Length: 139
Image (cartoon, rainbow, N blue to C red; front, side, top):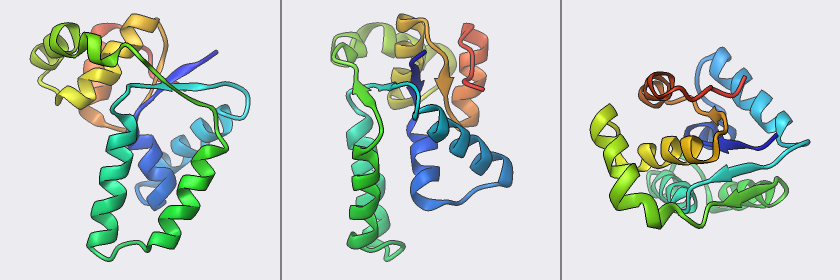
């Protein structure tokens, strides 16, 4: 069964940082993607690109490292949601207001609610909002 993939998990794959529990969770999500697809809001690619560009600018990673990571992402099944924009100024905005989330984080919650899917995230605020909204976290 498909699920919604938050950028917080994707960035754990890239940086390999975080607590042992976070790294284990991120690895289990990547393992799950061997058998199913993940769905992301249309802004996901921009979020990934932004984090990579900033990490390169700060000298944290090289372009070669980023390139290898982007090649890895091509090997997993990630589908873009085409309705992200249509919902941005309505239900996504409402969720951002209700749960005091960034619009970016609210877009993951909106997508999970709209698709009736679980959410793979390591973001604490998004986890709390998802729980309140009745969205299951991917196990």
